Image 1: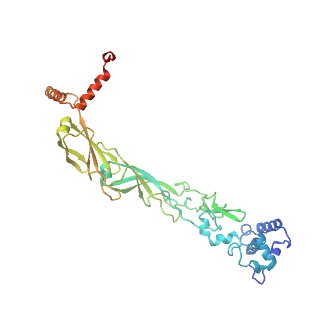
Image 2: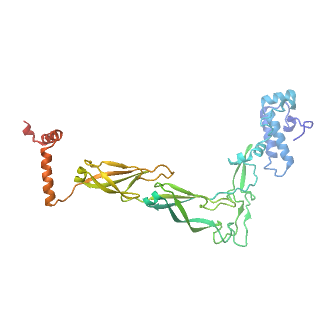
Image 3: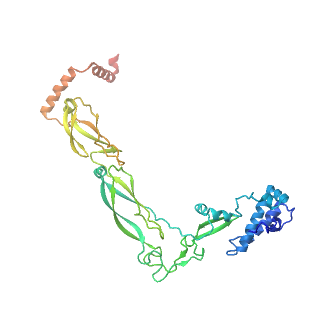
Length: 378
């Protein structure tokens, strides 16, 4: 920019008289900015200086307040009151904060090679409940893309090389100007690569990648639940040049168990017992994840009653306390009786009938009244 001693008059810069209307000032600035825009004059430092000088002039004369101070005091009246802290155009702002703006799709148009991380992959693995409870190592096989061994990943036929993209000049990005702003987007022709493959590799058809089956061993932590995912870092798809591989996500599915139902860390199972076992009490073996264990059924146990065995459920995948096992008692009624069993039960029925409680007798009497014919009530 010109020094303080040689700084030109802002009206002279824009080529307008001192009594020019705001519309006239704005029109003059647009004409100069368009003619001297850096995108239209690549490598022309003189045009860049003229653009900045016009921007500075319009910043002052385009504001009624700043223009009044300038008319009265000259450059000294507006020095130190610049609108952007020394930025003369939007390009200066991009210069200072380029990384921030480029993160939102804006930039100065520099060619900047960015390593792109590979895609993540997802596979499914089915295990049984016991493996989920104890933890296990499992080998999985899946398909992923690898760098083509024929072309080395550049997609070009052996003996040839990719050429610079004509559309973006090898930058991988294009810039669209919208007034003061310049929006930087990925080149639609080369999709950001900056190069175009004319003679494609026959093995990968120009993609630089080829599908391969790979095997990997994964560790399943004890206590994992159905539908949870395991992340295996760096086992996904390959990245671009210097880009890291993506990750592999393994979704774990757990097969239904013939005895246990699972609810988080809690397990539940049902055990059948006879009427006499429920009435008199008994000791029997119940299944657990650690094997069969003795369990005492107290006398007078009712059908559907649930007992809790602490610490016999699933482990916590994060290392917390192990869950409990809920044992539900199901009283089985025999479908067929031999003569001896039938005789004993009939004797028991006679005893129950003779000793039925007042509450139960009242219930049966009400039941009899409900089904009695209407004429009997008359």
